[in-house]
Length: 88
Image (cartoon, rainbow, N blue to C red; front, top):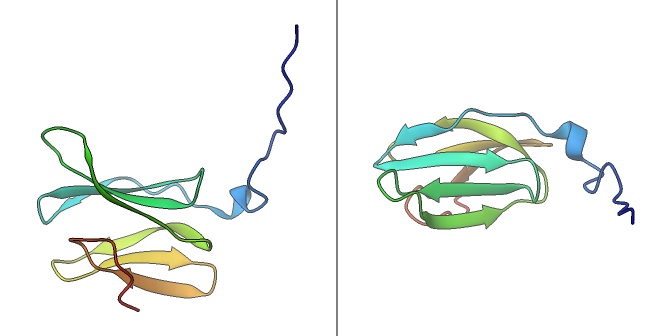
């Protein structure tokens, strides 16, 4: 029996940059290429504190105490580091 899956489920898969995880503000922030998701993880338990899906996400740019900056296809976006809410 053979299972077939398309090789590229996300048509923008090649448009995503692999970003290393970043530790800041007591959380580990990372992006996933599948699902265009940004995650904040508890470094002690590995459990997700929050997750946000951004349709045009390309990768993690920077983390400051006040903002989590991510690259999108049209530029930068800022997320709230504590909740993942979009700031701008």
